[in-house]
Length: 511
Ligand code: BG6
Image (tube, rainbow, N blue to C red; front, side):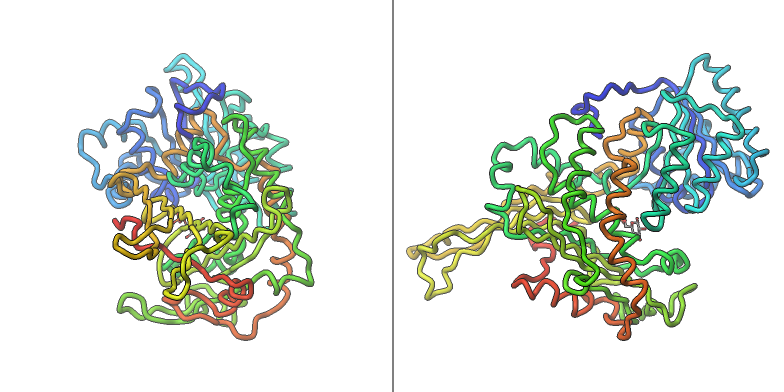
């Protein structure tokens, strides 16, 4: 999190060693290494730095670095790396082939750590990064412990990617296991949405503007929509997705975290635990979903084939590694309530899906109607309800829709937009979520990471829906074509309350 506002006691270490399990995997190539490289370019990494990538294949350091250079060139927001920058950065990277299941092979990491410690003559931050499939999280933690690798409460960290568990019980078990080996302050559970630039700005927007807080409650807000729509399908992730479904993949983590940031009470400081306490309170205040009420508050969908930008795309059931009769949902919409003084009676609608018409992550807050309309209504002069739109991606911006008089001799109203569009900055100017998160891991700031109770509370909330959806097969899947806005029952879900789903307003700057 931005260091200027963070007054945690964390200190930026002079030296750090990253051991990246899954160092040849997709996440390392697409996200972790491009992010580390960008941090390096901005001079944000410790002076003494060693990055040890590990995977099963036997690779020389030179070959490993060459594949990483290709990845950086392809995925970095800054485009291709300059030769001299890359050479300096790459000199910090080495490769260690290892079978993560074999404790005997962890000796090699111990040797590396020792070598760097001896060379630097200090205690570096040691970061074990589990960029691997979730079934290996426990194995890695146990092997770190059995092999007696460095595990100092102050300087050693373990990073766990999502998904964190596949239901409440498995998340509890994983927490339990990790907490027998590491303390909570050593565990960094990633939800990359929390690292996104605009998501962090919600905190500034809410808590650095005195005019927001008086409006931010049931007296003025009519309803909230959180919408993360994606144009892509599941692609090569069919096997993962079959076991996950969109409820686990997106709602349990990203969308509920966005809801927490919108609904949380003002924290008294940026202290990691204070902020996370406020978020957990939201999850605990959310109305329990009763098994008999699931259809009334949710809608699920699965995409069929269709056309996207002139190309025919397969339906979910035709994707690789997907059961041709799959019951897995690729779209979900849910309605929640937060039962506390601030939010009583305000519905929060969440929707997310694959193969939808547009990729956009948006939060829309619609305010109540004016209490009395003094404008003539015969010429449709009815003031529209104000809306605050927070656009997270791909277009970044915050927009407030207000009513205003159309210049002229008559009193006629028009909706105008006050737009904060990041002053012409595009996504490639803003740090990627992983840059923010990696920097926080190095400096020991857990504000943007999920705490054990946070993850469990989110699972607990959605378990009734998860169980019901798993046990009740849908007869009309697929129920929305690719390149549409999703299934009809999701429209009905929100329409029954007299609302409709909002999309990106025109005035948010397009890249
Ligand atoms: C991941 C999900 O956590 O988030 C993916 O597993 C999803 O299915 C992705 O596509 C979306 O992230 P972003 O940053 O592209 O919005």
